[in-house]
Length: 429
Ligand SMILES: Cc1cc2nc3c(=O)[nH]c(=O)nc-3n(C[C@H](O)[C@H](O)[C@H](O)COP(=O)(O)OP(=O)(O)OC[C@H]3O[C@@H](n4cnc5c(N)ncnc54)[C@H](O)[C@@H]3O)c2cc1C
View 1 (cartoon, rainbow, N blue to C red):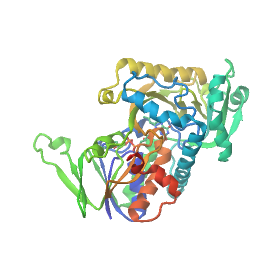
View 2 (cartoon, rainbow, N blue to C red):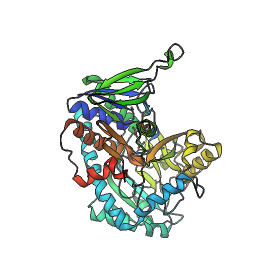
View 3 (tube, rainbow, N blue to C red):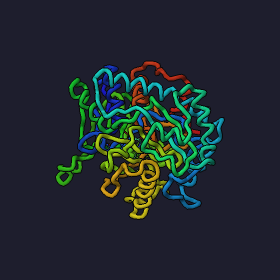
View 4 (cartoon, rainbow, N blue to C red):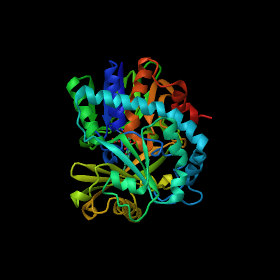
C-alpha cells in the first residue's frame, strides 16, 4: 500500500519504519526542514516509562510542585486536571497501567530490534534513580511502588544514604525520604535515534521524506485518501494552489499539530496540550556529574548526562488551551527555568553550568486517561498515532508497530483490552 505519514517526530519516523518493514511504500510529510524538530527535539532522555513516570496515578497532581502554572477555576486546564484525577486512586491506576504495560513491553522489543539490527549508537545509558525529599510525598508514591513489585519490574527501593552510595553526585545531606533505582531502565538521545532511523530508511529505500511542506487538510473518499499540501515557503508568493497527494492510507502522527488536522475532519479528541521545558547545560564540575539519570520524582524533573552536556527536562506548564497559540510569557519561562535549575541545585549540585544553559520548550498532547490514541479513526483509510504525552519515545516504537499491523490487516500483538484502551472510540460516548 502507499501510506502517507503526517509528522516527522519520533512517532512519525517510528511509524514509517514499521510500515516499511511490513512492505508498504511510505511518504513522511514534515513541515520542518528535517526530522525531530518538534517535541522530540528537547526530549529528556528517558526511554521507557515506569509506573513512577506515568502522567496519571497517585503521584500525578498529588503534589503540584512540578507544575508551573495553576490554572484559574474555569479554565480548560482545570477541567482537564479534574478529568484525570480519578486515576489517582490506586485501583484505577493499577487497572490503567495494566492496559498500558503491554504497549511499553512491545516498545521495548521494537527498540531492541532496531538497535540490534542496525547497530545504532544514540548515547544509551543504563540506570535511572528516582529521588523524593518529602516523607509525605514518598508515602503517596507507595501504590506506584507496589505495582513495581506486582509487575516484577526490576527495581531497588533505597534509603537516602543508599541513594547517595549508588550515585555519588546526589548529596545525602540535607535529608530526604528515599529513592527507587531502576538499574536496567535506560536513557538516551531521542532526536539522535530519530535521525539514525531516518538514515536507515534513506539507505533502505521505500520511504520518501517530504520536508518543508505542511499538510493543510485531509481528504477522505470512498476508495482513496489524500492530503492537501500548503505551497512550500519559496512558492508562497507566486501560488496559492495546494498540491494534493493521494494514497491508500494516512497516519496522523503530527504531535500537537494533529489536533487541528483531526478537528477539520470533525474529530475532536479531548487532549490537553502541555508545554514542557528543557535546559541543556555544559558540565560545570566533572566529579559532580551523575553517571545515572536522576529524576526529581515530585517535581518530575529528569537530569540526564548526554556526552558533555546535562539535559534537565520537566517543568510542565499547564495553562488554558487558548493560551497555547501564543508564545510562552517571559514570567512563565522564568518560573519554569527556575524550577529546573532548583532541581539541579538540589539533587546534582555542581554538575551543570546553568548560567550557560540553553533553554527550550516543546508542546505535547496529554489525554484525560493518560494513554495515547492509536488506531483507526473515522474512515477505513485514516489512522492516528498521537497523544503519547510524556512518554513519547518509549511508546512510539510500540504504537508504530500496532498501527502498521492494523494497516497491514495483521492482528496486533497487544491484548484486546490494551487495543480497546488505545482506540479513538473510547472518547466517543
Ligand atoms: C521538554 C520535554 C521533555 C520530554 N522528555 C521525555 C522523556 O524523557 N521521555 C519520553 O519518552 N518522552 C519525553 N517527552 C515527550 C516526547 O518528547 C513526546 O511525547 C514525543 O516527542 C512526541 O513525538 P511526536 O512525534 O508525536 O511529536 P513531535 O516531535 O512534536 O513531532 C510532530 C511533528 O509533526 C509535524 N507537524 C505537525 N503538524 C504538521 C502538519 N500539518 N504538516 C506537516 N507536519 C506537521 C511537526 O512539525 C513535528 O515535527 C518530552 C517532551 C518535552 C517537550
